[in-house]
Image 1 (cartoon, rainbow, N blue to C red):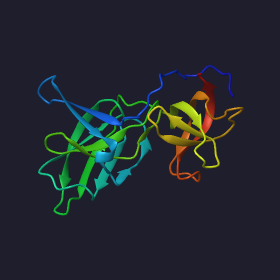
Image 2 (image 1 turned 90 degrees about the vertical axis):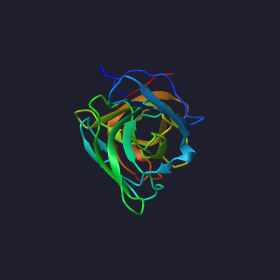
Image 3 (image 1 turned 90 degrees about the horizontal axis):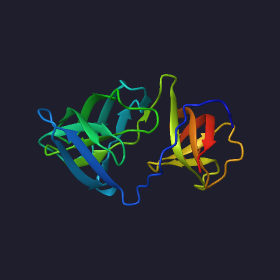
Image 4 (image 1 turned 30 degrees about the vertical axis):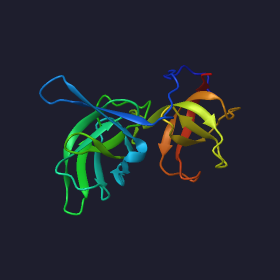
Length: 207
């Protein structure tokens, strides 16, 4: 474990036991905000987000073929248990294909992933993506959570948004149950059960 001064900060532990989503959309002509609730199970999986990592300002192509036909589609971005901002109107083809090109907001930070969400014309959420990993200027991410035993044969971290990461690098005496903050570079769909992996360069216990 490194003892150097770090940008690491501590965050309170969140859970998604009930899995509600709050989608808060800024109205274009007023400060009014629209709120919609849904459960993860009621949302279809957005099939393609390219790329799935990058700094604020990254241009992302969103595409999926599995959503019910809608008169109008909006694509937004946000974080679990937080507000979702509508970024653009998407297009839906005759067989239900949805596509949109959006930009990761400048306010996004490396401390937690974002998800893209598709709304219908009345801003009810109907689709949600895999996490997009916002990186800092050095291509790094920071995650806060708990070391777990997921039965995958590797050291894993379940973060405050309940995403699971495989951890690589010098992990010292970390063991299941430890609450930690980690920093490192991230790779997608690694060899440990297909989990996204963090090559850890710095960590500290928080519990």
